Image (cartoon, rainbow, N blue to C red):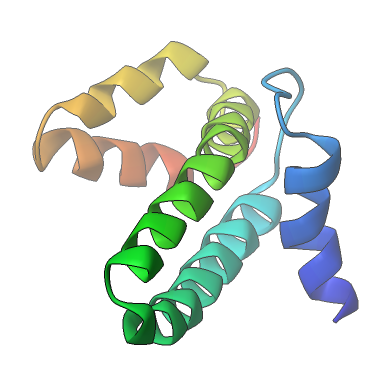
Length: 108
C-alpha cells in the first residue's frame, strides 16, 4: 500500500497542478499502471449503476486529468524534452507512438 500511496496518491494529492520539475521513469510508469488498475476496477464496479455510473466514471477521469498531464510533462522534462511535446499526442496513432518513445527515453 505504501507504493500505491507514493506513486499514485501523492501525485494526485500533492502535485495536482505541478508541471515544474522532473519525474523519473519509475514514477511515471507506476502512476500509469496504478491509474489503469484503479480505473479498470472503477469501471467494473460503476458498470452496475448504469447511466449514473457512467457520469461518475467521467467525473473521476476529469479529476485525474491534470495530475496525469502534469506527470507526463515532468517525465518529458526529465528526458530532456519540452513539455509542449505533449501536444504531439493530439495526432492520432502516430502522435501516441512518438510520445511512448519519448516516455521510454532515459533521464538526462
